[in-house]
Image (spheres, one colour):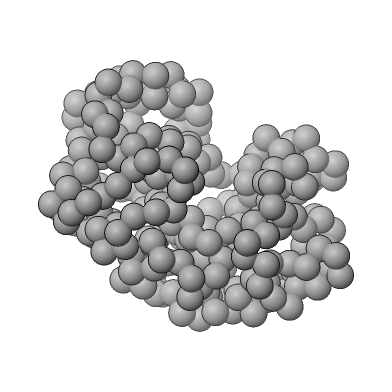
Amino acid sequence: MALKAHSLIRLSAKFSLIINLLSCRRLRLHFWKPYHLLGRGIKVFLSIGAENNYNYDIPTAAYAEEFANYLWEHFLGGQHGLLGSATIDGNGIDFFIKHNTPDHVDDLAKKLTELREENNAKFYLSASPNCEYDNEPYLSPAIKNGRFDYIWVQFYNKQYKLCEYDEEYNDPVYLFRTWNTWSSDIPSNSVLFLGLSASDNAVLNGGYIKPEALKNDGLPTIKQASNYGGVMLWNRYYDVLNDPSYSE
């Protein structure tokens, strides 16, 4: 099921996967800001992980299962009330994993999927991989095993130049080639999103496509994929500041 434009907010919770989240009461305050959007058709995803300069780990399969149970009890099932009356039931967990043991990331996603099925719950799992399909070492096993409902591929960051839109020459060849690989190889149950920088200032290393160029040169080809779900922007703040913005 595709998400409509402006129907997603991804909360970035840059905490270690090993710490005791019960001590992080501040998370409730951060969560409360978009909480009023729940129930209004806007999906709110709690993003776990962070860039690789943050220290976090899923060291074993047993730990992955324990952490999945923790997420279920304190965020998804709403049984223990870490977020007070808030819950992300009907919304989701996003995997923003930039370093880890790949098999244990898959173990975590697998266990969350099992909990969803066992409890007849309604929540989604998503992944935010780098755009190089054959060079995504952390999320690749879970993606290929069909663990994610949504995949927002990050087509930005100069270190992945071979799969980005060429800003200098307005050339989408690299982007199209990589997009076609993603759209043809991921499992059929996953919906694919084109992840872009919302402005020149949104990320340090490039990946910005002007809205007009995206509309005229990018989307006519991108949208041909049967599993196309939409465009993901990093992030909404910079999109509002940008002129013109994507939302216009």
